[in-house]
Image (cartoon, rainbow, N blue to C red; front, top):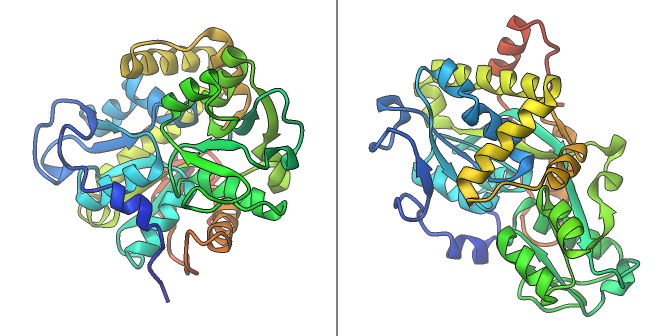
Length: 348
């Protein structure tokens, strides 16, 4: 039986995001709640872990398959992207695992489906040089992108496993401070926080630009070093009404993934061009290279890590027990992969 998640602080702060001023949007479609009446509305983050989306948009791959460029919206963290899905502001979005779990639980399995993987890895805990182990974090401030997002759950669970408390109200042995990644770059450089559990390129930027030290690579916490950091979810009502568009979007995902892995230099250039458009400033080559080394780009959703991630969220009180049966719909993706002569993926 599905039960409602406990993410009151996050959802209270994340009111309906359908208003144009709340989203960073571009594209030709100006209206309607259904992408069927115009370009598909696609969400993603300005992170290297979302390179599949960045490349697909910048290289025109999605536009080629969909027949029109998608109308895009960017988000800082997963809970905001999920609220946009709930409000009908986007049809599909690249997002991390925990927000997808929360969306599934909150909607009792009726709002979204995970239809493809996108990336594995690419997350680190970066700290000030004087911090040499987990116990040194006692009394320190650690930033995450947003309360209840994938990195927020990961650091709180890891601290708990190591005997340290990090409560949602900011109390406990370690103060976890949810803030936007761009703000984290500033607060870390200014000495207002002692570390951050963040995705790429922010982890590499903290190291290369502010002399941070990698205390932990999250890969070390997962079997085989594999865990989902980004996958693609779609609104169920949109997918039911527009199966052809979903299939075409997945064709774009598969082609973008192939380009990233087959032509990494071209992919890096595309990612940097898109990030520059979104932030006004490209990444330094050393940051881009460092970021790409940390991430595996794959359509495999690494489903075992999703189940484990849900258990982590339950253990720290950010999610009530939830049955994830049916959260994946990989049939359309496997159809595309089979047609392309590529290995199919599993939800087991």
